[in-house]
Length: 195
Image 1 (cartoon, rainbow, N blue to C red):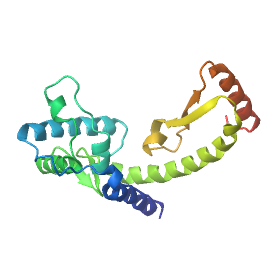
Image 2: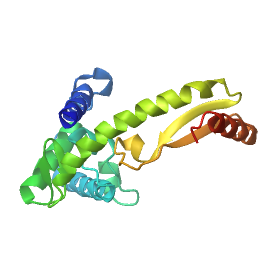
Image 3: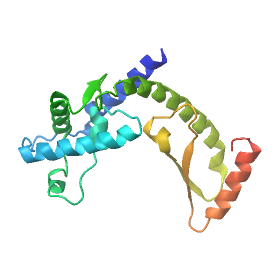
């Protein structure tokens, strides 16, 4: 049941990205990709999937577009300035057809790693629980003076939390107040047993 909820949640994210005009990635004025552009996009997709494979994280087409690693010092850098989601999807299908990558349940990964899709759904559900815990834990931290923000990092930021994953956060303090905020955070978290 949890896995099905995770699939629904991930599918909802995918449909949100596709249907929300604010995140529209299809461009009417852009011509179809040339062979050089298609090759550059495919190479960038393989690099993106390889990086996320190190994290045991298969990606959806929208995530491939969103996290696409672009080359910095090559002639392909200019080509990859703004690839459309349509171009990404086309390149993904080309890579699947060539056997370079596989797809299952809307996720893309390297051959032999299909079980990661099941694990991704389990980790997504686990991440949702950790998000709830983090929200409860950080409510009282709003009272700390000079605390300007809390950002989530690590596996939770990718919705890829493992069973024993801790909550990795980045604390943002007002200028010249880092040690004050750290002291107050430490005291407050110790008092409430959250550290």
